[in-house]
Length: 475
Image 1: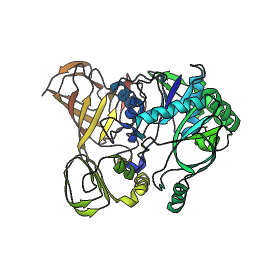
Image 2: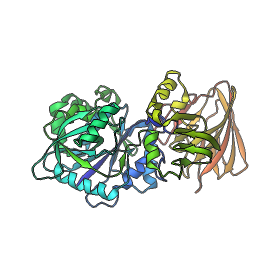
Image 3: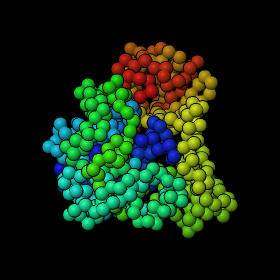
Image 4: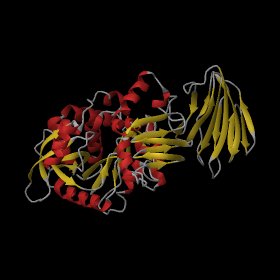
């Protein structure tokens, strides 16, 4: 049995403003109608020897990931919540410990949630070969046969073939992201592959090697699992324990040291969609080599990626640009500088700008809200509540709210009263009054919310009851 382990905790900073901390690239529909994590899971569907997936994600993504899996009829075996991100060594250690307790030494297929693979048939062949190699006690990593010198990827140098397999090699060394001149040498030599970050190994083998080279990580992760707890459909690792784990990659802690590491070179139409250059190459271009999304009007424009999310974007007389428009931010950069978008993200963080964390549309377990207008003492939002969902029972100390139903029906708690509001009906929630919204219907409920008061921050909230188990104001 093969158990997929999906690593879904990345932030995708080089794809800002599309990808942000609280809604990163693995949750976004970047290349088609499915999000990146949905595409990752759907590529595995229907394979007889592949079991239910185990997903590891940050705590703030838990409900969004669960909802996205529900929409594509994927029932995970387990969703493990990391209280803090600790890189791939700790994530794989936790998954291996928990899976070992449930299954009889399965082969783990470790996949990042945010990769694109276009040749699915070759991908399945890769898994079959990797499964056979892993069952021989090897730690398998998959290398991508490079098409061009790429400075955004790490590289792996192949050594000799291993006995019994014609296209499986011992690992000579790992190389961090190189400068262009070195990347060109690697590609020309035919001795190197891109490091894909995908792995296969039996639980017994990876735990043996983790104990050998990273026993501190295994010990900490075992304690975090032992002290962890079930939370609705999730397993929450113990925060105090897990915070002590070092933040190291599985490459650094194990794969660079072990004698059991092997690499399988692959040609599967792979991309990690780690930058707008990669996103540009992954989509179909027009006759002028432009990739266009949304309402875009061009004149004399070539070799550019333009994504208009909300407004008409008109572009005249340029080439080699990346232009991305969202409701609250616009990015313009040259194709050659796409890797440097993360520098803008660092500046946003330094200045405590909210645009680095959230979109104007903010997703919640019950649905989402979108800010339509904001000033010093008022804010207007549109709330969309999923059928059957409800917000927490709550109150605010600094703001009052006025709700108007514009679609669907709402069961409202307003102090000691309960009322059913239909379209074009409204209610007023005074400051300090306990309140709640529930959607009892079969269609999404839409409410226009007007907030007024001296402070309109999301942390002005006291929760008395919440079906999603949330405690902190920002989750």
